[in-house]
Figure 1 (cartoon, rainbow, N blue to C red):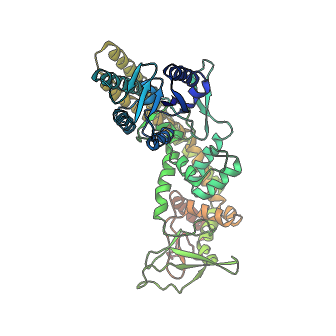
Figure 2 (cartoon, rainbow, N blue to C red; figure 1 turned 30 degrees about the vertical axis):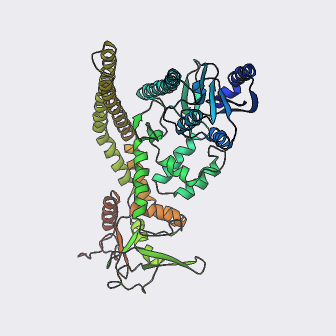
Figure 3 (cartoon, rainbow, N blue to C red; figure 1 turned 45 degrees about the vertical axis):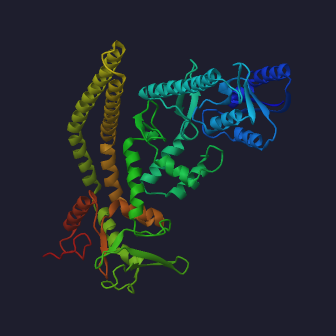
Length: 513
């Protein structure tokens, strides 16, 4: 009888080790020689017998189906044949053996499946298949339990995301740390996107120029940049790709939760934008609407970009007349008047406001310190509760399910406490800095605006303006807070300089004297 030798390992690592496949083949060849079998073919491969997809085994099965002679299909053990009793290949080869088309020989198990097999041998075969499946299922359960324990400890079990790197510690344990070469690039991607200074496509090019590469060493695709901006790992939360389950991890965050939320809000907001061509550098793009119909004013460049005109998009044709065009310079005149008025604020006034804010800030600092102390105490209390839960679990006082549920709640609360601590700390450090920056920006707004490029002008205007409208003749600007209060101070400063004033864009209502 002619024989086919099949030797299998589960992984490529087992194949390269060189101890499993050669040992299987040696035993099967000796068995064939003792039984007088002529070895027609010999196959060895690395392929899991537990999964549904077994491409190499299917090719062998196809050849056996085409064979007209009875073949002895030889394995070392039953588990080298399959570890899944529900695998359709098991039923196919078993039926072929029972019908006399082939014989299944399992050398080390001393078992042969043929057309005259006894009930005891059938039972032995089914038990061997069941044990093989139980072994794989038990390994799977152990791996899942190990992963669950790692998640409870805040560990990540996969490849580190871009911006991080996998390392081995001195005690040969796995760890993840920020990549010194790429972590700063990731931070800049979030900051640029949150500030509206780039789209996914422009960030893709910028990241490549700064040295960020994908897993294959090539330019990171737009989908990878989008995934990066949606990955909460960078602010301290790991998300499982298979289930979406999130848990706080123990590695160093690269960004704050607030910055991540800003990116998420901006990403959701892109679909609400009514304008196209967001990459074109127009100063008032998306910032002005028509007072008649509420539609956005659309910019259009003429003569190679030398002149820029704005017109209503005329979405409601029964209300507005799209034929009216206005030059960008005309729209910017009232805004320039506002910036000129800002320049009239005396530096002594700005210094006085900052001093007053500093005095007010002393009370805020005391409040912040109390809150930070309270949050740190609560964090330690939550940690003590987790330690008690572990003792109760070891004593058998609570079930594993109860422990996991309570432990998850504690971890989530500790994660929220860390976010609150970060917010209090950042607010404490940046309060005076932000106030000083806003006042000085207003003071120097005209100089900054006139010396800026179109995209930079739009950024300044987006920082200052809110809901500005065009009434068909002129732009009516509306200022964001706190610039509206600063404009009021500027108006008062102008009033003190002269009782008789020309038309003031900050105060369009004519008053007596």
